[in-house]
Image (cartoon, rainbow, N blue to C red; front, side, top):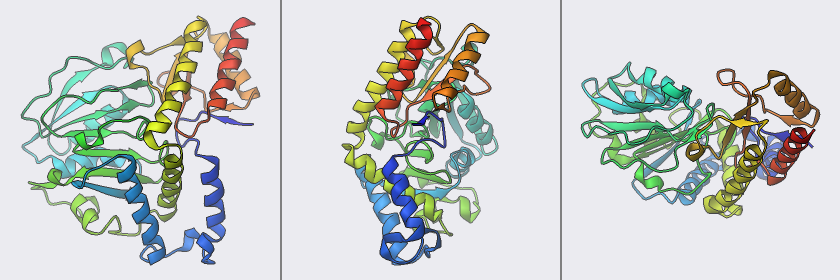
Length: 353
């Protein structure tokens, strides 16, 4: 058995792979492949609408929220968000907690003023800043809920009266929260939602008022809303995989059901790491991500030995990001508890011997 701990594109439920594979040959007994369906046919329109409704149901979104499935990865939203929301004389407030926050800040500066209100760069992004003040005059406050590379996660929604914008690419739908508190949420699909190549974007209708900038059609959220995520040909197959994954999540008891499993997986892995000093988690205790567990070993030779052992035991995707080193074990929704038990058993054997 292969244990897939890849950080993204990542593991998806087995039944999603099986159903998607069948649909490549024959979608819903139509005699057509999902890969060749016309995107404006009633067949695919039903796929898109069910996926949209499942997002609203699972996230308990109110009627003011628009749900879009757009092309590309979350990195496109680094510039599409400020392009739509930030007029040239306005300021966006940003939290700098790692690589993806840095990239979002860089892109936003092309379209307006950016104020970085707090940063954890001083300790190599191993914690989440606390007690920062969000300026009341900012157009919005942007932050990354889970930092995939550094292994930190912000569990509490910031308290502010200005609109919240969140990159939830690596922890969306993994635990319960009040998603209606956000003016705009975006997430690349390839971790908890589906296959790479599609963005989930959720935005409140009030966020689109007062846009002064002339926008390219493909970058204008308003046009995507008017056209029901079909301003041009959408990523049909990627959206279909999202639908299958959302159906699977609903069967697990929704976000509440999967949160219980995710807490158990993370607790088991961190308990094992803390029990064996040969492994050293890098993140502040209160900010440890439940999706991406990052740790190192102070002995370079032992790191090589453990990496080789993981490979031998079919533990894939555990090498840490090049900017951090060490190891990263990703625990996304579809990863079974059995894989975490296999990893912790391997760690315990390695630590003993």
